[in-house]
Image (cartoon, rainbow, N blue to C red; front, side):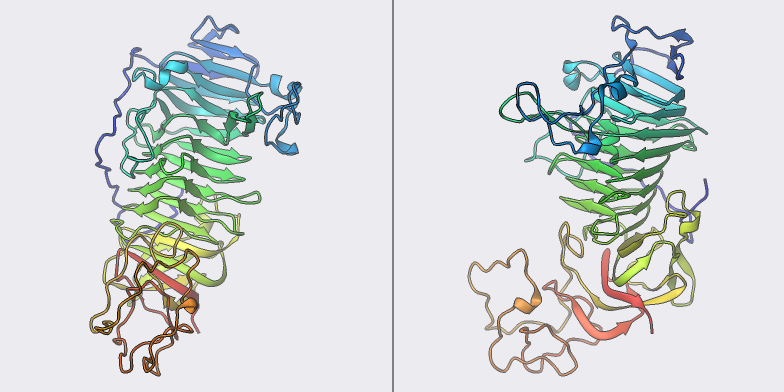
Length: 533
């Protein structure tokens, strides 16, 4: 695989060191691997034909879970929420062969299955059983499924089985997760999968019976790693989401390329799920349908190492998106989208957030250089395994590199053209233009001693600077300072010449385009970015 990110120095892979949250590695009762050879004519296990009855620990069936082509049950209750294009006939479903794995162990998959699914189901009691773990080694496996996920972990051990929204945090260790995918050394694997829209139980309450959103889907926490040196490749093509788990997902190594109509990666337990990337090369072209983020965590997103390239739907989606906070602690990251979820300010690695004044073309190369022209970061989409030849537009970019330094000034180039910016912004929090903290008040810029805010004053969620009330008479801004309408400063209180970040989190619109991108904090945001004059 071509290298697509070219920092000036070797990229450091950071090891994640977090406390164990109730996870224990599952026991491996079988000392050896079990070989499953896939074929459209005959599927074998350790070179013997797999039976089609559930008396064996690995067996074949044609009972794939899918969204039927109907709107209501025979009882008259509504069937589900699937749209017409998500419905499938019984003939389509039965044409698929399901490889059922019902015993813990390590299974090496090889060969081609054009209409089928690998389903792991160790029973309803598996969730709390540390021995109920299955590792699937993908060794030149090619699996396609047009009515459901191509790989489905239905019931395995959940290492975080004591999770709750009250105790959830970004620090989670999934080393003992019962669902694991390993990308075999030197292999190239292609997984093409569909999804199952929400199906209701046949009852008046319309409770969920099934919903499987991704081409690779797990109801429990899942780990993905490369074997040995991590030279294997996993290509995922999804008509909805690519990699999807109900709880946590950890990527440790390997080369993963995702093409998805919706989110490239999604972990979907609100306020709990953690998507963790510790290493490997992850490349995502998401939102090939109507919408889709590159990586979407309904809890936290933590990047500790590796390379992450994520491109979102250009309409209104983000390369990186999380509900509870995104942290960039290491690795090399470039995420492109129209809306961006910036990294938290207490991330461990310097990050640059760029909000452009107009759409940019993702086919253009991006470079970050020192004042003397030395490149510290460069990205050429023509060399990327997913972005090459798939040009689209974006208005926001998150860039992070281990070569970025604090208190350094850089120049940014897009498509060979130097970029300038007209504003900075340090509003913090998930979904905001910035991270989770605030910048320091510049020296010499203090409010009047007798200036007190009203009691119980809380800004509304849709706060904008122009909504600020008039300040006391005589408090006018200096002539050379542009302030939002309605916001005034005390007479004579001019900001320092090197002012970059205000404490109140408002955008500083200098009215003058600048080309020096100064890394004042761990997370540095710049607005109004455009081609320099």
